[in-house]
Length: 381
Image 1 (cartoon, rainbow, N blue to C red):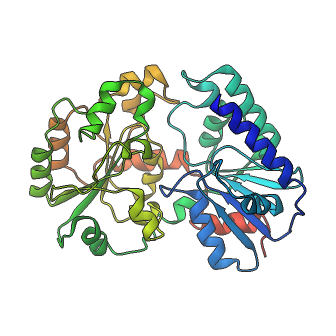
Image 2 (tube, rainbow, N blue to C red; image 1 turned 90 degrees about the vertical axis):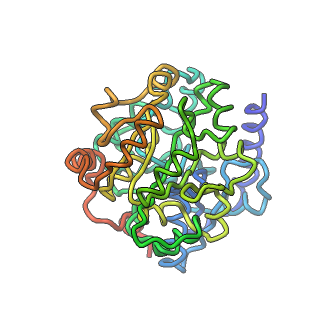
Image 3 (cartoon, helix red, strand yellow; image 1 turned 180 degrees about the vertical axis):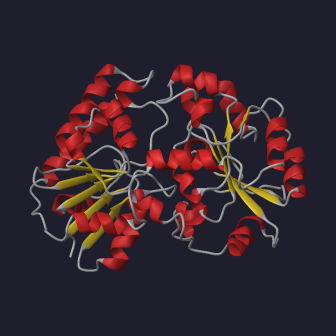
């Protein structure tokens, strides 16, 4: 019922905004990615800095039923509309550029085990009718996206993604980052970040309860004090960046442990950062089935894969490519004991050749300034 009323609201706002005259130099970015590798937010910052002749509006969060009509007027005025999730535009003459928000490892749309046929058909129609240009990085990316969303081949252009521009251009120093999050100075510091995927969709209340109690790995042998001691011995500092839904389960983000810190959106919004503007400062990544792993390949740094819910995730939603152990360029761990052992022997060279192989498959775009390449293709002046 809630989705029915929201679609009704969207259709009403689209109808009203349809009569607003379009402006040739008006751009709207509909950002549904928050500040965790957001193509929308990072492209917005790029346009503000490099294309002052354009009227650029960032709409976030998107979609939302709480936008003032003044914002809908700007959406109606836009000649270009950039989206990070589902394609969207109001008028046929508007140009929708679909960035999406990651190279999919998880099944989506018609490929997923946990989606409804009516929703999949609606999404297919939406992509075919609304998306004018879908930015891409490789043939593999296009194959996976089309398998999930039935996107027509002619819509793709290998222009890259704005989020990747930020990876090698951190906005602050590693020293300042360490001090901000841990209040420490350590010349030997190795900073790691843990970014799991959306575990709520596993529909297992026990997992959510473990996370709520502070067991952010949901390990059966989780002992945070022992984990912290191990990190401290190795001069390693672990940033925990959970999915926004899981972050809401925590009442207090102030970790009492010296080498473990939670990163929530407040820090990013207060400083006007996107996570990817800081990610290049880290030395290793921990993840499970998140698409961040493909992006992190650009840094060519170690990745550890947490697989304690692999079988359940494959059953509930599924992965696009498998077997998992063959597609992950790094060690897999199922519990804290294995993780601690892995961290103690972590080396920058571990998995180097595999990382480079998967990077060659997922990114065929030559050059690093993806935002500029997109602007040139669209003939921005």
